[in-house]
Length: 362
Image 1 (cartoon, one colour):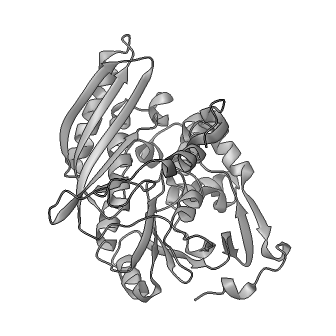
Image 2: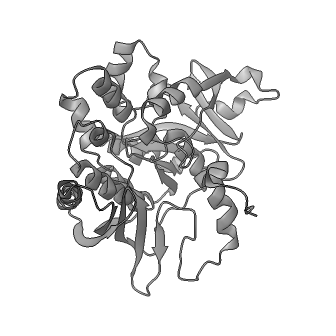
Image 3: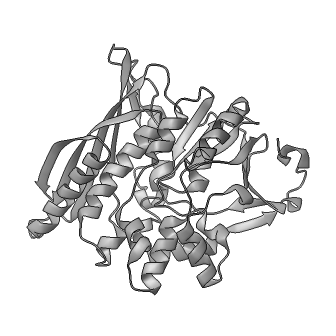
């Protein structure tokens, strides 16, 4: 139950939803139910509808004066379409809602809308207009609609021991680009990466042809959170550090700062998707990576609950997650510094009764 005295900061988004959603009824046409990246609706045709609505995070590049506000529109399109791709759908249309204060410069509102329209055109998604209303502050909400073959959607929380953990996309590009823009003149590839967010379109479409996908989740809250969201009850995950596909911006910035590259694995802003895929499909997944797509097998689902890292030895990973109403990427420096300081890797030997055989490569 949700106590009447509790605030959203007390609970955070995830705990609030975990308590509320089980009390709501699920319509028979609501195919995948609550708690997934996007919602699938059976409308009685050969293909189901997929829908998503999401507030777009305030763009760091615009907040810092490094770019205009078209970035915000691009983020809105990317965030919503990425979630549709993460359930196996194909985005088809997008709408935008602007809630803005009366004294907001007209140029900002126009830039946000133009950015969304441009990103839709780039991704072959129909821009369908939206809504503009007066409000306190400035909030941008996007909504996307798509289609999916009946019975082919991916749920969360389905990964079984032995399944492959597969990443579509790269890690750490956003954090590396952000830190470079802060420490140097914001320009070049670092600024471009912050200003042109893009979902894993090609990779998601290619992986959708694989029959053995059991579960998927987009990386909007970071790798650690997303991996946990594809694991069945009682399962855990081992990530292989040597297999993690770091973006060049992450590797360059880590080298420049003398920082451990692992800190760049668990940030946000990279818009990848993590999958749990049956081991029988390993060769198909590897072939897609060899074909030039940003697809990599980064770990394995295991029978021991928890998140673990293989890096020479085995370590248990402890790290906080991007949590609305508590810690958000939009908080910039404090968030990224806390993320780096909060990562703990505890040698597996410290866990009483841990069975090493659960973590051997399969």
